[in-house]
Length: 161
Image (cartoon, rainbow, N blue to C red; front, side, top):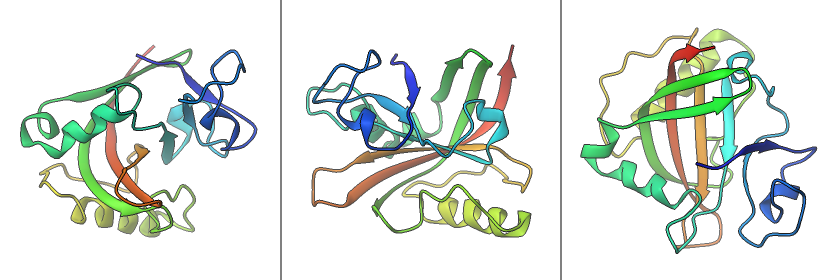
């Protein structure tokens, strides 16, 4: 239950709150290159800190457990609507391993990307993915080494206005 912010770059909200005040824990934020309306993005890339006190994106680690992976939807409330997503992939990765791609030259390249993310998942999903799908990628740090990341990918299954 955090506001989803979007800045002019991907640095500001790493250390700032929704009111632009400095905040060590930062905020949950959408990649600045993504459209504010999530439905307009093939991939909406969202970042947040993995806080030791259980706040922010720390709970993304729960998706490494089968009972959460298969049974918990991700719901995002925006001014444009309420977006519901089903998780199809959770995996450990490195900051520059391509998991955070948002631009694709073709539908086939995009479909190859989402199927690759699904194949890298720690847990199996029977969700069928299509080039027309819209997804979110949730990204947070793992506290194991400097560029370690946890990525959760989920496909859009519903929008309420």
